[in-house]
Length: 280
Image (tube, helix red, strand yellow):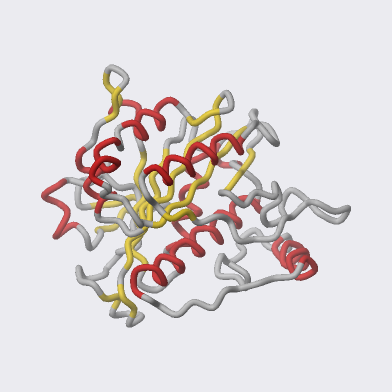
């Protein structure tokens, strides 16, 4: 495990700028966009005001973690976005109750929170449900009211009743007074020329859906299209957070069905497609 002033994303461990202000609380994050950035309210490199997006998730075998990492990667593309990636761990659930005051404090200081977990038996995972129930304090204090929110889920089946999980997450956000952001992409893989590598190939808008084969490990989590959709969703959330928090100008990107199909076709030509795409 990295020390409390270090975050891990990909291969290299790097210090995060929040260490100076958050280290006393010992936040356990697994990703941050604050690499080599001074602790202040302005992204001086891009001359942009700061906004904090936290992706909080539970993953059983690592597949949902891959989705969370790509979503956080898309959010990091937005100037001024300070992005945290926080895993809800089963060892923090004791006697059926989850508790981590440090994580809850980080979420209270976030401008947007994105919730994610696998779909298990048509519901959120037990570990993530324990986290949701632990949000009773921000519920009664309205600490998360008017923060932005979003959600994502993963299953082995094409459907797997993932919509039920996104509905649970959206209702959870609504009870906390949060403003929900859905996926903004046109549907993919809904015509004879479509493939599983299309953007939004499962046609989900309430939140992000992904599907992984049950006999494959997290290194093959989701499809190429799912991972690109996660990046685009993360970028969308971060841009809207900047608009919501800092009144940063935002031009709503729109795309026709023909343009969406052309975009998906262009993405199939590369295994390393960029997340900053027209229509994000």
